[in-house]
Amino acid sequence: MTEQLGLFDASAPSPGPQWCRRNGLLVRHWPGWAADADALLLALREQVPWKQDQISLYGRTHPLPRLTCWIGDPGCSYTYSGVANRLEPWSPLLAALRARVETAAGCRFNSLLLNRYRDGRDKIDWHADDERELDPEAAIASLSLGATRTFRLRPKHPEEAAPEPISYELGHGDLLVMDPPTQQHWLHQIPQRLRVKQERINLTFRRIRSEMIRHV
Picture 1 (cartoon, one colour):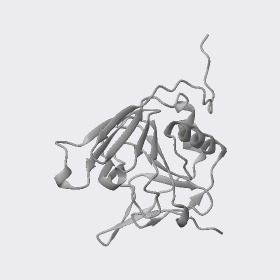
Picture 2 (spheres, rainbow, N blue to C red; picture 1 turned 180 degrees about the vertical axis):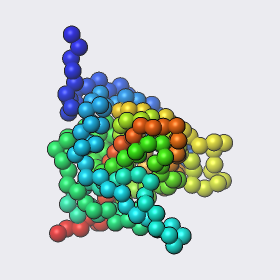
Picture 3 (cartoon, rainbow, N blue to C red; picture 1 turned 90 degrees about the vertical axis):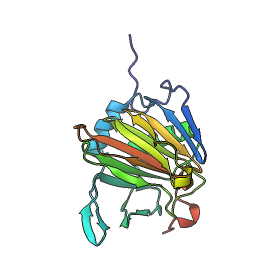
């Protein structure tokens, strides 16, 4: 008889990560890390207060090509692409998931950005998670749920360019950790995949620098 793993069962088998090392880059990847990925995907669809922000590019306002939600400890404000994110509190589900991710990554997190890619048209362009609020000495842990999507990395500076971007096909339940100093030297993206009709939810656990936390 097969034992069914509970939603927050941290005793689920978790083999070691696959490592990728390049100049200025350190990535760890656990394929199929979340044994309860199906339950997590269903719960997050319903429980997260998703929103679609507007961004300004070249003097025009456009809807962000994905839905988002910003979760964090009190005072953990975060702005990117000119968008000041409304801070939402940790739900019991996400607080428990944070503890599991912290154990795997070996790093403490005080905030979480969720991105909901409704289908393959939704995307995120080349960027680094190097905003001034983020602790450059902390890892960023990314959990993927739903449709498999391509995740690419390339160096920030052309003289350091690899022959082609490093590419992962991140699947349902995969955990990927970008360790420092990756954000200082590399960019990453989720490109469009028009043939993908299913949605993907991505959770990126982060750490806001202590001096940037607003005490209220």
